[in-house]
Image (cartoon, rainbow, N blue to C red):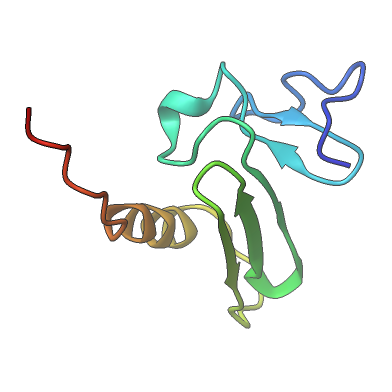
Length: 94
């Protein structure tokens, strides 16, 4: 479901690829998001959002109950804040 399918490249306006069940962050679109290449996601009814970043080993679920549905800026703000909160181990001193 998370493997790019023939004809699924550049499926949506952001340039992500598309598998059988999810949008997939591709090389073309990874510069527009803090998510790493290979992250897969899907938006649902009432502005719910789900995404998995295998490289960072994170799963995100954002359940908002908004009608009419609105996607975009609030979800991207949340995504940016989540990635900013990642703490990386300090590089070993030489």
